[in-house]
Amino acid sequence: MLWIYAIPTWLFTIITVGTLCSIACLGHWLVRRFLSPRLLIQNNDVAGFIMSIIGTAYAVLLSFMVVVVWQQYNASDETASAEAGAIADLHHLSEGLPAPLSAGLKEELDEYIRVMIGQEWPAMKRGNWSSRAQALSRIMARQIIAFQPKNAAQQSVQQQALSVLRTMLDARRQRLHDNETGIPRILWWTLCAAGAVTVAFSYLFGLENMKIQLIMTAALATTISLTFVLIAELDYPFRGDTAVSPHSWYQIQRQLDSDR
Image (cartoon, rainbow, N blue to C red; front, side, top):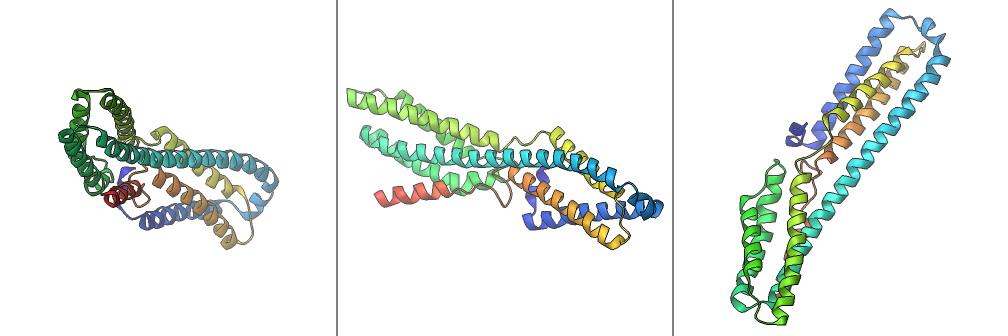
C-alpha cells in the first residue's frame, strides 16, 4: 500500500473510485445477462432483509476503521507537537547551564529544529528519517548526561533537562514508529472481501430499469471506495498529501527567533 503515497491524493481517489465502480457495474451487468429482472424481483424482500444485516455489519466495520486511523493520526500530530515542545523547553533550560555548554546546546537545538523542517519531514514522506537529526539527539543527550553540576541550582536544571530530554527522545521514537506501522494486512483483506460481498449481494435485487440499478450499484461502490481512500490516506500519518505538517516546528522556530 505504500506506493499510494507517491502519487497525489486526488489522482489516487480518481483511480480507486473509477476502478472499483467499473468493476462493480461490470459485475452487475454480467449478472443481469444471465438472470432476468422478474426472477430477481421475486426475491427482493428476502434479499433486502439479508442485505440490511450485511450492510449494517460492514458499515460498523468501516466506521471502526475510520475512527481508529483518525485517532492514530491525531495522536501522531500530538507526538510531533510534544517533541517540538520538549526542544523549546530544553532551549530555555539551557540558560541555567554554564556558558560553554549552554551556547553549544543552543546551537545544536537550533540545528535540530532546522533539520526537522528541512530534512526529516521530507524524508518521512518516503518512509525514512534524517541521520543528522539522530546524531544531534545523541550528542545533546551525551552532553546533558555528562555535565557535572557545581551547585544545587545547576543540579536542578540538569534533572529537569534530563526529564525533558527523555520526553523528546520518547516522542521521536514514537513518531518514527508511527511512520513505519500501519493497518495489518489481514484487516485490509477483510475490508476488501466484505466490501466485495456487500456490492455483490446488491446484484440480487431486481429492477426493471437496468440503468437506474447500475447507478445505485455505482453509488454503493463509490461510497465504499471513498472510505477506502480515507482510511489509506490516514493510515500512515507522516506520508502523502495529508501528512502531518511540521507546523509545531515552524511555531517553535518563530518563537525562539523572537526571543533573541
